[in-house]
Amino acid sequence: MTEVIERKTRTAETKHDADYVFYELTRSICPECRRVIDAHILLRNNKVYMRKRCPEHGRFAGLGTLVCRAPKSSSAASLTCTAAPDQAQLSTLQ
Image (cartoon, rainbow, N blue to C red; front, side, top):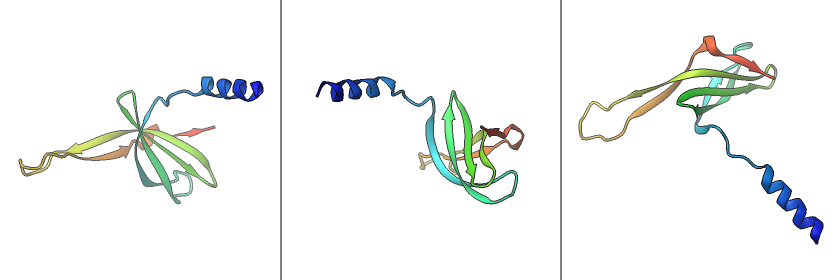
């Protein structure tokens, strides 16, 4: 019984909060083969990142821009935001 309690305590101590906020799931393309793949839009340190993984070429991450548009009518209270990755910032993750 003591071993089980010690094991649970050790596991709880090693957990950490993520340093990013998941914003949305979208579709993107692999920069190598142009295959359509899933991508995660992440917000970290007031910057937008796109993280994606191609089954053939591995993981990629890139710094992007969050473009927000105000609605045309003044009665609407919501913004429409789109994350746009900068292709020049795309890098391969190991």
